[in-house]
Length: 432
Ligand code: DSN
Image (cartoon, rainbow, N blue to C red):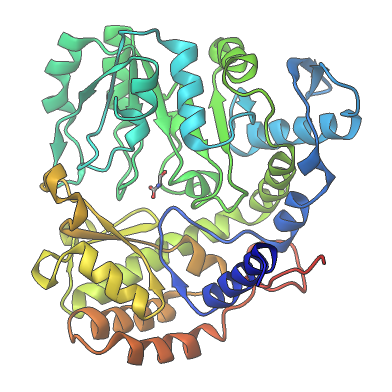
């Protein structure tokens, strides 16, 4: 088989396999067919370097360096307008090509080498791009960690205050990869104002909930800037997004272009317009069902004997469920066994783990955005928790469970909360 044939064979296998899997990765989703159509359009071949101009009738105008962008200019103007409307933001920028690039763009706009940035440690759920290991380190920011309350699974504001006042980080990050409950935006904004810091909320995980009026609205609660990816609980194409107050707009725009991105991904901006339009119509219903599903899954797993975190707080207010599986082999074993049964989820450090435990941490993180997007509700969450019990607690052979998972998935092959289409959620669309 040629490499060319092998590649297309792999793509087909991926589609077929994923149509038979329950995907519980909290940072993933499946887009609507309309988003997929936009992504494969001619915009994928083009450049649109240039500067954002002012607005005409509420829509952005652009000063491009190349010809050939007359239709794309309207596409990008639509993306910005829809994002500003949906998230009630004064300003949006859709240039960054990922969530981490959105963070890097904001860091380079608002801080300089040697400044400090505060955020959650990776064990407490902070994203690596908030730390010196990743984007913050790239531009020489030194990180300061918040104190984390393991019981509340949230930032300990009073415990963190003293160090923040002493260290005076230039940027204070909120938001995380492990995020069960709303972050204390109002309280942290008070500290940020006191020490002259800019409060940035990384909404990558919860953007879809934010769109639907669930979880929290970081901008209305006081964040100066929101960064995000566009493909987790928000079911758009892969990409990045920045929302901010007008006072930060020019610095953010210049850091995005010409600062850190030469050519943004025009096809993904087109896909983002589709997802924003879908979420303008469906996000309330979608976000509500995501949270109902996460709570139902957590409750059901708890009743079946799993050590689900935060029972006293109702387990979760987000799209995530976090389970301590240290008593049944650890996160790595459980995630691997689940994959053998066609259930895809990830191992996760818990706040009391050390970084040395990264290979086999105490936890697993479960997310329900994708299963909700393909139409599952509370009763399906009960069925999923039964599968997880059989694999993990009953130690049943995962290949036996896999047969039942494949049968179960036969009923979930369409994307919901989007404009009607005859194309299936995992269908492979052939061009050649
Ligand atoms: N890797 C993503 C997550 O799983 O949270 C964040 O970038």
